[in-house]
Amino acid sequence: MSRAEHRKRPEDGLQPERTALSWSRTSFGVLGNGALLLLRDSFQFGGSLRLLPALLAGLVALLTFGIGMQRQRTLRMRPLPANISARRQIQVIGWSVIVLIVVTALTLPI
Image 1: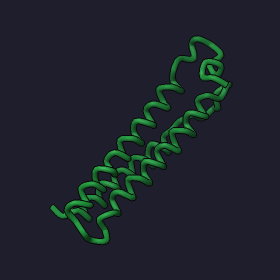
Image 2 (image 1 turned 90 degrees about the vertical axis):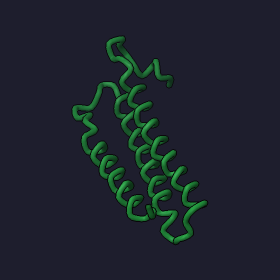
Image 3 (image 1 turned 135 degrees about the vertical axis):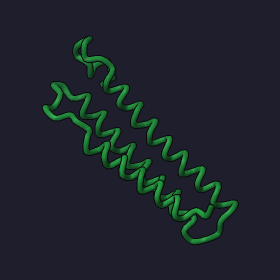
């Protein structure tokens, strides 16, 4: 079924498409940060913890992508479910990014 078939009325808007792009952009941003951390670590540091921030960034990116896919499926449902708030998912991603920042700050020497 194509995206156009999911929207039954013109007033439905492009919310599912914008949601998918937003979550994808976020996951690619976190994944890009993990790749940069991995590149930086491979040239400068040799400790066993050097891969931890990059692996954590990869996990956060996968989590973000998975939540984004689930949100996209939810917004494509017709009629829309009564509760479509993403408050909990946004909190999970927010806290995951904060943990990633703290782990990165603690494992990388200045």
